[in-house]
Amino acid sequence: MARLNQSARGLNKTHNISGHAAYVMDSKTKLATMALTTLFAEGKYYGDNSGQLLQLAAELCRQGEGAFVAKLAVWARTQGNLRTVSHVLAAVVAHECYGEPFVRPMVRTIASQRGDDGTEMLATHKALFGSKVRWPHALQRGVRDALEQMSAYSIAKYQLANREFKLRDTLRICHPTPRDAETAAAMEACVARTLPVPKGWESELSDRGNTAEVWNELVSEGRLGYMALLRNLRNMIKVGADLAPVLGYLGNPTNVRKSRQLPFRFYSAWRELKVAGLLTTRITRTLDQALVASCANVEPLGGRTAVLVDTSGSMSFTLSGRSKVSCRDTAAVLAALLTHISDEAWVCRFDTTASTLAFTGSSVLADIETVPAAGGGTDMAAGFECLMKSGFDADRVVVLSDNEVNGRAWRTNDYGHKTIQTYLERYRAQVGHDVWCHAIDLQGYGTQQFTGAKVNIMAGWSEQVLRFVALAEQGFGGLVDEVEAVEL
Image (tube, rainbow, N blue to C red):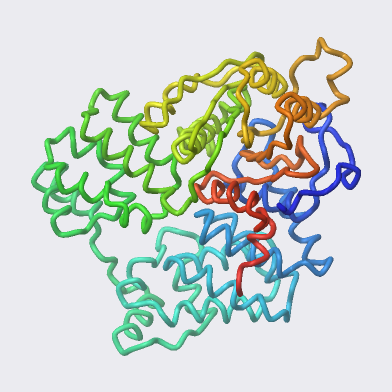
């Protein structure tokens, strides 16, 4: 059974931010859902909950659950592909769990992911707890462990010279032992501020111009990473660069998995090209293949899957101030991927009303485009009523939502008093069997609409969240169990 397969009597009733009835999440699940749906210090439709996340993480540490918070920090960075929130959780653990044996390996694991992760963790600790607080020894030593594995090139690349807290500060605090003479010289020059920054592809373009010749050269020399290629497709198309090697690289399943791109990145790139009128059938096929490849490690779902997609107004909010990707976009992408991995699927969208969507399962991008723009109230009950009217006999229902149910105020017997669990039970009674309900939380406001047997609460924007559908049904547990299994 999944982690939250417990009796409804075991959870207290509460209200969500919109005032509708909801269930209280246990502290571990609440922190996990917040962490995996938060770009720290970025606003959300119903307000920034970064302060609540910090408080809950600290409380769990003080209650003896620091190891769980440490594992969540590692999972968020290595599986959820989220950087800042992992640095925040790690800083809280290092501060609150002084002397605990799990702190140093947590820091080392996160700091080893990229050359600037260690510096960002130290900077985050300073920002949260002030410069007068002594650096936790485990934080220093964990970052030092990662620094000692860095190459001279990485030292030069990740100097962060334009940041308030720089790599030179990290080196002076942690005192790493360089792995060789070349790295020792790089570290010494970094501290002295005399280490040249390696010339990257951005500098090359700036110096030589945004031309097809320059792009072709950069691509042929392998100087652009996966993200850079994906984000610069538009520029390369406009100047007439050779797209054959670019699309070949982007569509390669091995490269997709190594890139650790969040699935919505592919849709975002495709949509940008569509708006600019630069799409071709080959580009569409490539990005479609890449999206499918991004969930290659997700087990196919046998039987029948019903997917309910929240398209209410609150889902229109972007994931960050600089992003064009909305919560609705992430829901649409995950819904399309679910359809692709299911034997048979039925999909509907709900806001103030609900209606079925013509997903085919053949093209992920085409299916995403059938999901309408966000707007209206959050009447999740309408989604279940649409499912009941359809006659679709599902083995599982997957709900993609921010859980801020606030619809049908005109039904006073429902509004504010009953969770959507009521409608799940009505559907189960209609089809005559205990349908699984997998609720994927996309904003982490801290409440849930479902509880009891065969209910699985998840959260996140990564394809990793889809793994929990099959895992829960096979009895391997849910999100909290997955985090608990992280080895430090």
